[in-house]
Image (cartoon, rainbow, N blue to C red; front, side, top):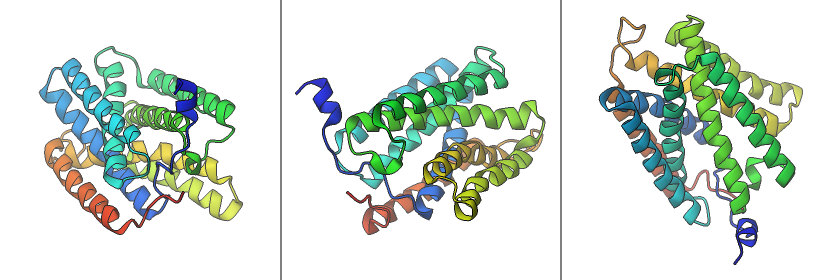
Length: 254
């Protein structure tokens, strides 16, 4: 089999149905990515932490590409590892290389636009319901990774550079997150546009509340600690994904 024929081979849908469960788990994974990334970067050498994140991300993605249909724990493990590694990638640009948050937002925003452009030019669709070939899945995960990095930079820009703090930034992103849903429901915004607009906002929304609960009182948080927050989030995600695995309430339709 050639690479070209492999990339076009038909698969069953590899992503879940977009239900309330999807958005809940997605928000929890974004928060997990923030708290876990911060904990690892603070406890390890930042470059070692990024390498660990990259390895875990690569393993999770490899498992996801190996299966031929949507499997809840496989898919959400991949999303969780994307969250951790995508957060690290954006944080390292600022913390280790000194890149301003606004520059990171512009860079990752441009990268996302390029991914969307190439994806649409190649496949003529950006629909999550069309992820049924390896090539489309490659575009999908490239988009997911880029949205995480962009959302991380945007969240930090609002909380730190704009001086909003974690809670105010979280409330702001919650409002922005709701806008596409309202626009789709009341004003018939194209569903694909609404989906990706909301999807991008899940990252800074979840991360802002993760920082608010985990960071110290002096930093404007509740002081619970990044590790305890991560543990609670892992338990919540595992519980919901376990339910989805058994009930198949979000099983992708072929």
